[in-house]
Length: 361
Image 1 (spheres, rainbow, N blue to C red):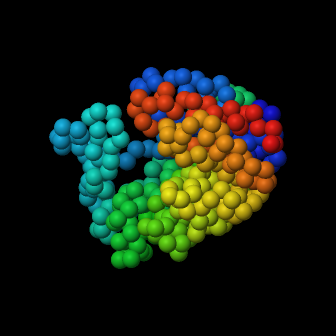
Image 2 (cartoon, rainbow, N blue to C red):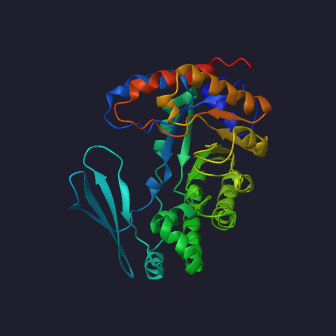
Image 3 (cartoon, rainbow, N blue to C red):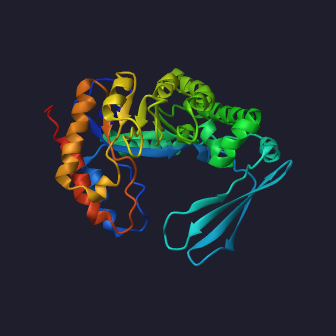
């Protein structure tokens, strides 16, 4: 079975010859220690490449500039110009190649939200040739996954910041819903544009993790995630597509919500201490309705012995795949430690080899 067919079957909940194995490759940039790992993944793992559909959007009117901040960071300021006035957000950008972080957000209160709502919806371009060129180059080595914008609630949560969103979900819930409705309309327009041109059938959506416990309870997950995502996913299904969702965190109390949305494959499903759902519980909930992607914790790819990774991988396959649930074995995140490529290489190799060599044992 080719990698393309194996992954297609995972997304469509069909029988597979073995689990797929995929590695997220958002590794540290310009780090030669990861070159050997990237080569091994390209040769032995199942491949997913992303085509970013929101690149079709006309840009919002934004001015950007830098300000000094500290010896380690500089401040990147974004000024969004709306018909009702400017909005400002800032990001702290590392000067040494490390991760940055949000400092301030565009939406802090109802007035800011009303300014954002005054923006016209973006126009959508028509040039999707890059998708088909990517498919042509990839061939049977894997699939091209159409990355959508972050889901409506996740988009609004990023515009607000998690704390502002949580407070406004009590004080100004109606305007958060207005913002989510706007984002849902954008998703519908984007999907209609690309599906009409034959783009698909694999789509990805993320952002649900902003509305999972403990910051938000199940009621908010259903009211903000399920409420707006299900119609979007229904639209994809109606067009013959399938949907992958990436959502970290504690999902035990909301995994039924992912099923209700119609998610076809969910990554990751994290046991304590990072999450609250075991592989057994995730498999029992998913059944044959939703495939699972994961779930080797990324820190284990630096700390555990390779033989431990092999055993964890084989146990994961016995727990999930052997019970009839589609499985793509994958770490919970991309390798992230600068200069650590040689450390994690044998762990990744053990995981990949365990999957490729799986004979149902």
